[in-house]
Length: 197
Ligand SMILES: CC(C)(COP(=O)(O)OP(=O)(O)OC[C@H]1O[C@@H](n2cnc3c(N)ncnc32)[C@H](O)[C@@H]1OP(=O)(O)O)[C@@H](O)C(=O)NCCC(=O)NCCS
Image 1: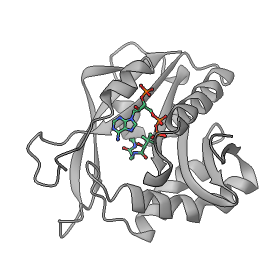
Image 2: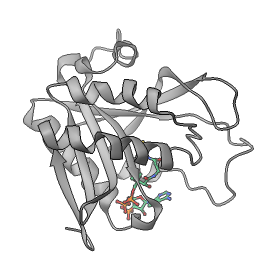
Image 3: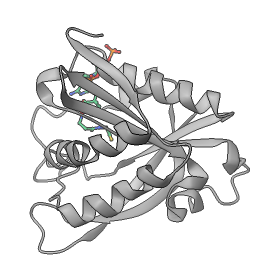
Image 4: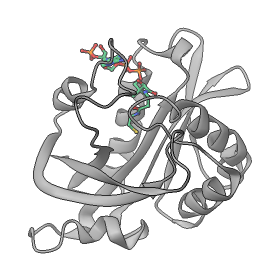
């Protein structure tokens, strides 16, 4: 419990039940810079299917009462979309021991209370319990001078570094979605970060 917010690990029926709320949270939070995601239900249903199906998946939910106000996801890398695992080809990591942290999304009113840390704690503990030796995630790369970048935008790099993650130079994947300002989906560069567990 953090200032009235409870973090719960969702699996099975509870995970299934939370999926529509998780989709709504993703669409709301990822509309902000740097994601600028123009979310739609079909895209969400397709994307969240991974978490519905992956045996080793985790969804950590932040609840204010019964209301889902934030969530973080993760799956073993080999249970995620193959194009993400392909970014690690030839780097010498045992992909069966690599855990992929998906998104962390939290409504702005609930930020700054340590929930982002709790999301990493939950996923890293789950990854260790599955026998993973490393955890990774990826973040979208946007140009410094992107027109939608708010003047007061603070990148999360310092937070991630404090959590023990480092940027893997040259290890990227591409992922497509439609930006709010775009007529159709375009491909984005996603930069991987990694830490040993
Ligand atoms: C990522 C996110 C879940 C973190 O939530 P949070 O609960 O506010 O994070 P915490 O309170 O645990 O703070 C984590 C650290 O980040 C720092 N931080 C908080 N808000 C920040 C911000 N807007 N910009 C940069 N750093 C920030 C905090 O100072 C804290 O550092 P500390 O450990 O030195 O105190 C939340 O900011 C969010 O939903 N962001 C939008 C979506 C996103 O970018 N997700 C990450 C990629 S999927």
